[in-house]
Amino acid sequence: MSPPRVDQSFVHGVIETPAGPVPRVYSFLTRDDRLGTIKVRLGIGRMSYTVDPGLYALRDPLPDDPVFVTANYKLSFDKLREALSGRNGWILVLDTKGINVWCAAGKGTFGTEELLLRISACRLGEIVNHRTLILPQLSAPGVAAFEVKRRSGFSALWGPVEADHIPAFLDSGLKATPAMRIKHFPIAERLVLVPVELMGAIKIGIPILFAFFLISFFLSGISLHAAIQSGLNALLALFLGTMAGAVCTPLFLPWLPGKSFAAKGVLPGIAGSLLFFLVCGNSAPALEIYAWLLLIPAISTYWAMNFTGSSTFTSLSGVRKEMARAVPLQVACGIVGIVLWFSSFLAY
Amino acid sequence: MKDLTYLRNVVTLALTPDKCKGCGTCLVVCPRAVFAMPNGKAEIANRDACIECGACVKNCSFGAITVKVGVGCAAAVINSFLGRKGSCCCTLPEDDPSCGPGCC
Image 1: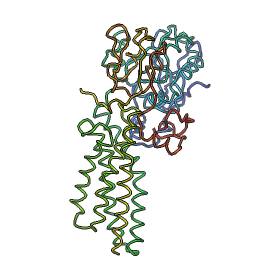
Image 2: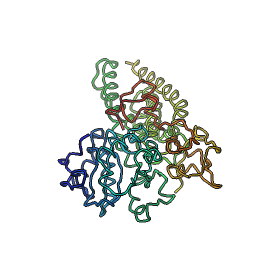
Image 3: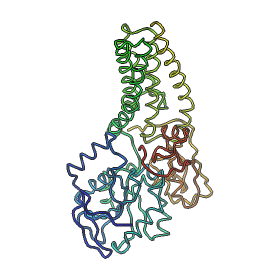
Image 4: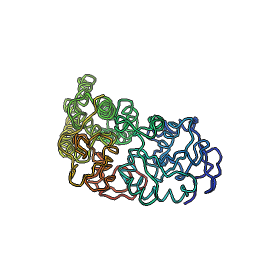
């Protein structure tokens, strides 16, 4: 297990310790760091946005300074060091395969074994003269604090859920208020997740759109004009269905009727259908219109349901229950919609 | 701020009061304030807020809590159904994925 490379863009030299040199980082984020954040928020290269696992020094830490544990997803790492602005400390980065803290804890990669392995690999016991680690509370699904204590002598203290609260947590003598222990899902956080949802939907939507275009080209008797007309209708419909499910539903989540995500996607889906009808109601064959009026809500509820994975308050039991009801309906609407759409070409 | 809640009466969370020693760790690690400790022992105060993340189970050294751990992610359920096990985040724990390039 080699120490983190010093040629990573955010590393500024090393500091010497009894266990060898430790790469130094600072709290400020450079333009490259911010650009990287924007890219992953758009869903570009998220799986390779990593930092080397191992121990880092934040500014000029002494053996008495606190040790913070985080994931090797660069966004997690950046959020932590930014939150620790103006402070000295040690940052122990676990190998979570570039996955964020909470997901990695759920997977077990941010786990007891990996933490124990890193503690011994970087010889943490020789570098600091206390035996306390500060872990993100959301790593608790993967890390058993009592095991860590028993096997390494290090007490794993649960820091707050949000990195922004770490300074307050430190200043109050490593105590978190009950409010700091709860994971909320405010609109700003939902908004940040929308681009990734949208990019995922677009990646699937483009080939589907192309398929609709090609099929209509052949079914309309090799008529480019007809293919363009129905292709544009498909583009508008897919756009509306996707916007309803992947953008409107996440944003308006608390105010949409229903408990399940699929149900919450119904109203935006119907709104999308109405918009479609207003725009294309007079310019397309009736069957094609009916097809899209059915398909738009189906698409909307699908992407709404997909947002369960990005949300912070769903359970697997609940998701299974909602899918058992929603998926058959989505499939039924999908099949009827596709049949209607194909039927609209019988006139040719 | 009123917190968002999901479906009612679905979660698999269970607590055995006899095993609980009142250490309060579950109250600390739970990100949904599911537990309360009114009388020196943990109680499930807000069951429907539970997301089955397993933080409490993992950190209860007395084995007083059980839950069927998972992630509330439709994509993971679909991947599991389709037998896809290569993605890192969007899979279910029981599929025991080999963590590699994934989707989350």
